Length: 146
Image (cartoon, rainbow, N blue to C red):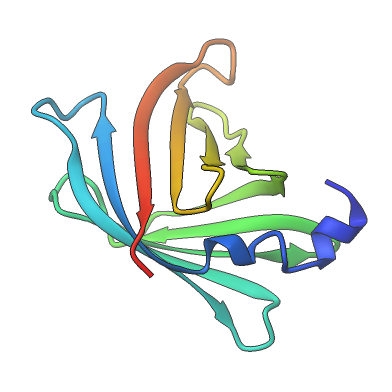
């Protein structure tokens, strides 16, 4: 990501608002799970806050804080189970990515905004062997509500 993208909130503002979600998780048969996500700026637009809710007890509600810390875009993830994870992140063109490389549990997310900015399709992958192999974990479709 270029220095301009790191310090310019315009790339991230495309997410601001309320979205409905449908998620299909590899361990949850029976079709997509509904939910919602909201994105809002904290104060002076240095940090973007994302709140996620899924209509299924096996998918935890979560809060993510996205911002540039020490010159590097990152995202802190917190969920109702008490889990905290830190991800590297970027937003280039129409693609939002975040990833972490944690021994035994690495993840990577790719979200692509539709041409009109009202949809985003996302794929999440998981590696349990330090990135040697990756498997599909979750597919999420976002639809802008407001």
